[in-house]
Every structure is written in structure tokens, then in C-alpha cells.
Image 1 (cartoon, rainbow, N blue to C red):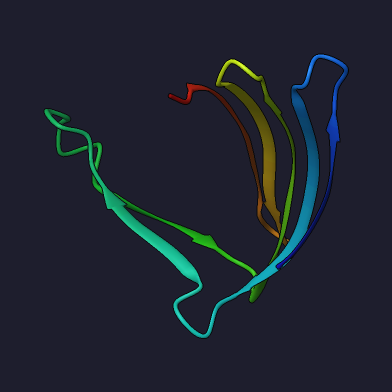
Image 2: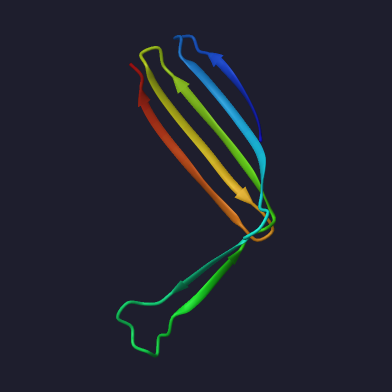
Length: 101
């Protein structure tokens, strides 16, 4: 993957960082996620079933975020991320606060 970013020192001495990244995840084999399931306590009419989620051979990985580090030791970070292919779209966000001492 490749990540780029920029850091700025704010007037109060805090550091602000913005970054983004792009990468590729590839699968050599086993690209299908298979699950067998059944409902606990269900009658025999509701038989067990199988489900399959095929993954693409390659997934594009994207990420972008910001970090704010105060002079008092507080760190706030927000990151958005995702993986994308022909038949898969997965994305999320992480928010984090930390105190460094």
C-alpha cells in the first residue's frame, strides 16, 4: 500500500495530520466465504441452509483520516476505510481518543 499525508503545527502548538492511503489485497485461493446455518429450535420444515459470499480476486483498499495531537498529551483520531471489488463493498470508520503521559 501507499500512504501520503501532511502535518501542520497549529498556533497553539498542537499537531494536525491528514493522511490517505491506497492499496490492493489479493487472494491466491479460497475466495469464497461459505457458512452452513440452521435455526435453533426450528421444526424440521425449516431445514439448515448454506450461504456463500464470493470475493473478487483483488480488493482495492482505501483509507483516509485525521489526527490531532495536543500539547497536553491528548490525541484524537478519525479514520475512514474501505475495501472494494466487483462484488464486495465493505467500509467503516474508527474514532479514537487517547491521553499520552
